[in-house]
Length: 360
Image (cartoon, helix red, strand yellow):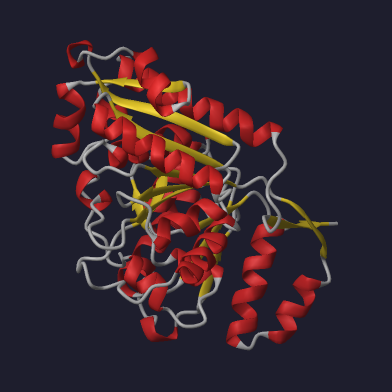
């Protein structure tokens, strides 16, 4: 029986909050029904849910989870939405319970390479999976290849909304932005690339930065997959990134290009202090050793990912390799990289602008 029987979908509120006064299963069922008829409705779950329950909530269309009704982020987002809808009285009550902002340790990681075909997308996707294992529902993967992004293909996603919608939404707020994200069943969100290579032709670096900053305010980890080369979008992402993962292969032409890119970004002061050189498709048959790679690029090889048929096969099936290759060298290297980023997030002060409101 429909839980919305007798209700007019057009009259549903712009925000719905599910608390623990309603059984979890019933909340999820109703959320799924609402999402099917009104995907624009922002739904929040107030619960100390387990990771598996959080993933189930994501699949039902819930885009925010708060541990209690007094959670600062929940209050801030709700106030923003109520303000946009003219709910000034309710917003005023919420505002009275909020203190000054304190640092929120968001971490932005940009994966880049001057060369194409080096496996950036595979690394970005699997890094998002590894981070989501530690922080479910608090990771967003952004396909910032504005022309030929293929994250949705590698993850076998069929998004309702894409990067084009996120850039095109006038006056977007944090809750509205989350409606443009696609949920992956491994517990993270994806902002998928546009279908048309020309869709984001007019997007500027400033717009890219604005969008990423808004995602930073909502997620603990923002993983950015970029286009090959150093376009304006990649440079804008690096400006606000805490970590950069520079990807190379054991190919001399690629290594020299990577060295030039590293030198240029260092000169422009766009390369974060926390940077990692990821050597992908590592193969003893290349004629080069890891120390040769390090000598050419001028950076230590932090992550070495072996050439594995299974990794490419998983990508072709639209499945993250970490979900099928549990204990292989590829999975161990990605999880090791994720742990270093996780540890850095705890040790290093976040950049200015990453704020969360705290309740008295």
